Length: 110
Image 1: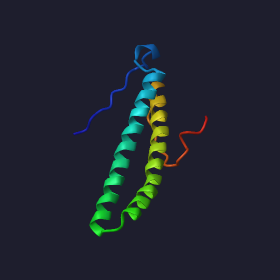
Image 2: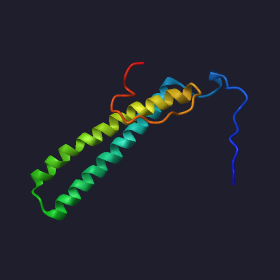
Image 3: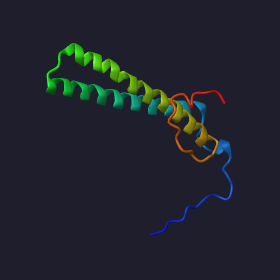
């Protein structure tokens, strides 16, 4: 079944929608905290489970957890930049673009 995309004839006025810098910041911070909590807890649970399953010493488990913070930090920083970028696009009534998976791509000044 084919669906038709309906677009308005003109863009609504900026003041008629509830976009504000504070709202955009809260949405971006919320998405960032969500990703940080999910990836951090998944990393800790996975490392702990494998360490207990294999029977490695606790110090090895803590070292691997410390190393696991690197990808968690990468995903968190990237998500913060991407979320803020998307919020700015939505506020300016533009379509969302394709993600660029570079760490500081969205955090550079433009």
